[in-house]
Length: 219
Length: 203
Image (cartoon, rainbow over all chains, first blue to last red; front, side, top):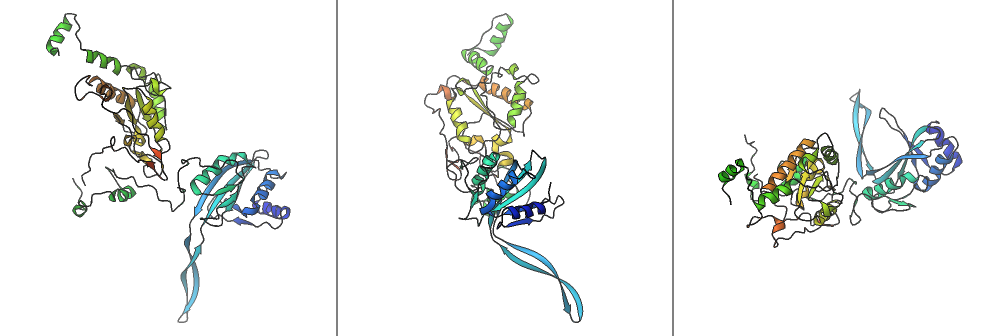
């Protein structure tokens, strides 16, 4: 199979004015992925599927990721001259990452027996710009997985043939796999609580009993 | 009521004396027909229990019925999600009296390893009267056999008359259990407090 760089070059030739980025991956497997502008995602996907050297006819997996707004700290080593002596000082730089939702497609070719190529589509933000083009018209197997991402993350796939909740019930509100989802509190009866369950159960402890809490462990 | 000593004396002479209650309970205890349904991996153990190696047929409970109308026993085998819970309660309501419930495995008892999740019911006993609970994840088929034997013992000790007679013989007791509805985040109501009365916890 061609390398991701070669695929990117050919994509840019075939589809001018398409912004593509390769996301580096520092983990041992080094699986890099292609970040695709959402407005051109269908064209890019169609090229990957139909090109005679690529033929990605099988979409094996579709996943969602929630990236909330966060401050990212990066450590940078700087050389500073203090009293005539050169010293290496670590400096932390804080950058604000805007929140967005991400959908990841893993593509393989059954015909040419190669793959995967990983596509990533990103939404504008996590509140109202959560629309992405659906790739179900190209790979039918993505239908249920896109429904699952719609259900659990709240990404709206334009062009999906049957976009409704698949795991939660229809009356459900919110998207439980988002990092800021607050689950219903039904920890009122916890005979043996520990860790996070203990914290949740403490809210249901009777008020009068709270001053009597002792750190001693019963024998 | 016949004296126990006289009864055993008569039995030695070849005269078998019994009571209507004993005969009735003996018949019921040995033909407990479970409802065919499994919710998760516990169902695999339930199936194993009904197969030749463990042979649930020895206890008269091998006839898994595919319809709630023909079943006496509901084995809640596996994780009850909040989406599934109303359907489980509805199936229970559709079973004819007398009926029994076994909560099989950690999930059916309390939510088990999924209790911190947003989507799993923390125990089917919040909506249904559970007769026997089997701990384990999943419980071995022997544990299910033990639960059936425990249930048989319970059936054999039920009284046909008197104030402590079971629900199906007491016309004043409501037999149907309210089916919860789907709410925006949880089931509504999130528990049936008439059924679910956990003991107070000393802290």
